[in-house]
Image (cartoon, rainbow, N blue to C red):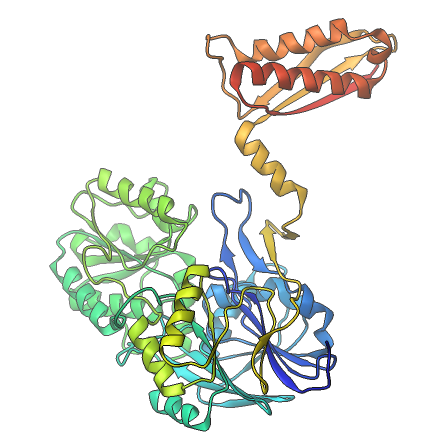
Length: 555
């Protein structure tokens, strides 16, 4: 029941129940007069189960209806799962966007540089600063992560302080950017924290995450020891890792060649922000063929097996970079769940070519940007929240994190999923009525809802193919000319070695021969009869029912 009670609510639209697609609403005020801020607006990447889909975006329909009360979109950091949907969805919101210089730069050179991208008003905020939007005061607290300028948000209202961690870890030597501001976190804890909305990505792992400095040392060791070409692939946004590879290459007397536009854009922004000071000039792809094998390190995109990225094209022999036996490829990345098959295909392709492959299974060539249990425990000890809501994770992560929060003495622990709305304070936290939520799909240039029939049709086509039949009938119902039959995605022959096309032809002609003349004079009736007969005949010899499309015209 709506009341005039001023309260702060948390309403995730993405990122709770899955990895990625992060989008979280915070509202303050009476139920019918709430003002809102949106924290992040990211994407998830479609798997093989969504043919034709490029990206998955959060459905912002709820806040679109309340856009007059949306005061701003706050960016915690520039990873795609936090900012990747802004260009596509911002026109539905129309609010100011607040981001640090690095995040704004990446947005401008990536998503907002695409053809037809909107002119998004981005307001630059500095780490450590505070921003007032209506009833919210938002403090940007520096946090270590696998990208510069990641922030925890301390959101202050009359109902207390809510801490939204974003992505973070405790890394005293992050390589680039500011380390986690532990002293500031302790002071916020002393101020009193009403609720903590915390990253759950690595809550299943004990201990603490290794430092970027440790990874840099191992990369330097491996590149110094290499005798042939070296290629390193990692996330294009991990500027710290890219810088470490560049410095290791310089120490080994090698030059860096870039293979991948995404890396070029990230490094361009990093240089503008001063993060590549002391890094020697990087070479374009044209330089690769002119450099001796022991004088080159290639930085390549495609660590997740993306078909159009440099790594996949190199393995397929469709790229200017050519590798030879005993060259070394380092995967300085982790495989995101769902990408295993694509990444394994690249690894296996490299091995078949005689290339040496090094992954994080073999050496510390990658470390996560997310906190393990030991780091999360310290954060709870510093902040001492009254309420905990696990975020950024699949259901297992959220459940384990909830149990962990209770073990740290948190009085109120609530599990939320996308579409839940939780009143965090000032009264006892509780679940309120659900709000609309869901997923949108970027399909080429279009943004489509999950209910679109085309997605179900693609699944059916992928499973059983399609048969297209066209024929002409005279006014008397006689067949005019030869029917045109085309099959896509079906086997060529039956189990007894008959051409499947013969099965289709026989069902087609027998149906037309036996169909009453009155029905043959009705093109729709003739189409329906042929469709059913062909589907049934093919199913009898194949065991699957294809999609059959029939077109009849009268001549």
